[in-house]
Length: 294
Image (cartoon, rainbow, N blue to C red; front, top):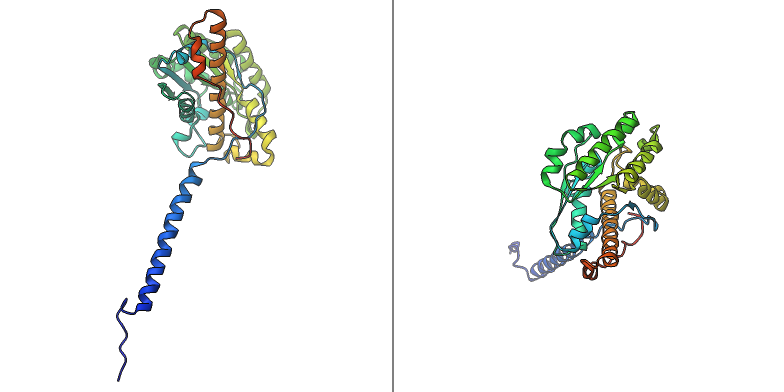
């Protein structure tokens, strides 16, 4: 008598092995689904930049509007650092992340950050589109990043300063507060003659016009001191542009600086006039993110 092979699944031992295999695969899928989103959703903490204040100057209009719960519009103008060169997506540019961070710090408030950065531009290019791309939005605050392209191309410092000064005055006359953002700390910036001259020019502009100044170079240099060789993760392969990690951490530091300015404005208003004093209760200063390498 000849034995005939059993049909698939007809053998009890086969059925048991199949059930075990299916159960094991299902458990693996559930476990992977539980672990993967958690790891993807938790970005690495930002580096320890010390206790230095990287935002110089006060922003009374910004502070008052935020404390009063009014709609707040920020326009970020600049070159590649604003446009987001080096980031993996537009949502990872610093303006996009700044909007998310401010919304987290001030839940329920209508805060809009508009990115009008254009790669490769210098101050005259930005002045030419100031009305169309910036003032058309009637911003409460304009964050103006410039200087790196002019530095690397050897533009005369006096021309850059004079053009920037005229732009700041136009913005202020239109009712917008202005925050300047200086250079990035990167090998191609540090290798350019005149780096310190540009940084000093930004200080002069801030002091003479009353525009606030975000010390990006000082912040990134503090990162480098904290991270050591791991600082390379904060720079793109071209040794100039920033990365997802550095844009995120810069947005976080900038949001913390803005929140500090708001709290100082609230305290000053309480001392001087008593206006919108109770708003301070709603806006406690958020703790900094834990310090470690990205």
